[in-house]
Image 1 (cartoon, rainbow, N blue to C red):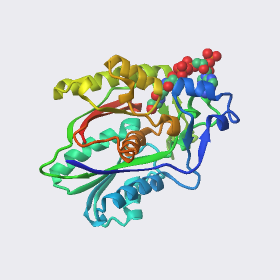
Image 2: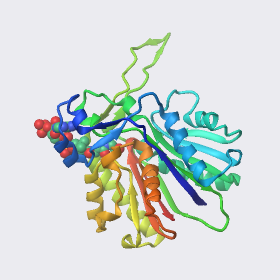
Image 3: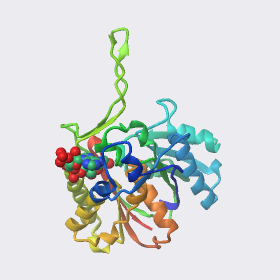
Image 4: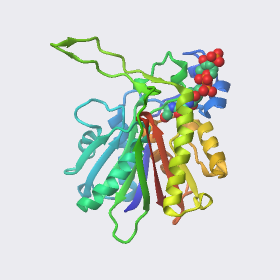
Length: 320
Ligand code: UT7
């Protein structure tokens, strides 16, 4: 399995910490020191499927792969435009992909890792030639813009990788995804309440609720656990990994993990300053930014680790 290319797309409108301080009682110093975030991109006239389509279009353009050869489209998202059809099906329509297996994956912020894991297996099972694996979120839709505990953290965007089922070259060395029950509801959004002739409830709101410190502790613990398991099972030393591309939630989580693994923090590339937390889109966005900056060289070992609501987490080790 080979990663033929990457793509990403961020909406044009940017909201700075300074802008946010006019909406809620916050300030740039607090947000930067606690999270590393300075601004985030937010949708205006676009929705998740537009972001996914634009990221996918970018990788199709750079690789030159014909849409008729795409046999798999997976979109990792927890903020679809609508319940039906899936974002993957909207991408199919927008890009004129005539015929492909297409579906969405919701594993919250770990969604892209789950999608890449599932895609690797599916492409082998069905001998699919090319697959588009996309992480796309318009997370701003589920944010309460009066809640300073959450609204400073998130942003919108999309990232993608184009996978090629290559017989000689295998870049996906290791995959592992898991979930544990979120018994204390530390990370959760609202949804649609039951409303039928037997039960007429009011529709709930969609806002995200979070117990920040609990999520922080969970993140540091499971990321270290998941990365260490990957290293032990592949026999690769932590120092031999060239980059650690973690889900972008908070720069302090990246620093804590770097310290616990005794790895220099420079190996933890981050886009947080400009993007905030884009949930399932964050890992493929980082990969695309790094690729465009020509930081990724052939043979480099890269650890991708996601964590998030569910509670989900997972690691994929790739060789560039
Ligand atoms: O994809 C996964 C999603 N989530 C995460 O990864 C989140 C993980 N957690 C975190 O990143 C951190 O817990 C936060 C950045 C969310 C919060 O940082 P913290 O150091 O855990 O702060 P805290 O929640 O303990 O709050 C400290 C103080 C509180 O005031 P008091 O009670 O001490 O007076 C908060 O009300 O900071 C206050 N506060 C703020 N102040 C200014 C909370 N949010 C803000 C804000 N601006 N935006």
